[in-house]
Image (cartoon, rainbow, N blue to C red):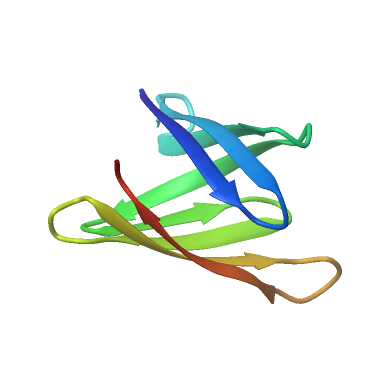
Length: 95
């Protein structure tokens, strides 16, 4: 499994701890995220080269990794009702 500890400033601190791995029964990757506002999410993850797609019930993301693996360009969408809408765009840098 992979653990990601992420800290961001979005109108205050936004800290997320993610555990990612492979689910043998489902035959797919997964991500389970816990964040400092009390939310827990379960996502299915697909990987195609430097592109990861994270899909949940009400959020989804497209994460593109740089060739050196030190930078992520992330586009999040959310579905408050019947249509997917832009949520946020972010760039993450590995320290």
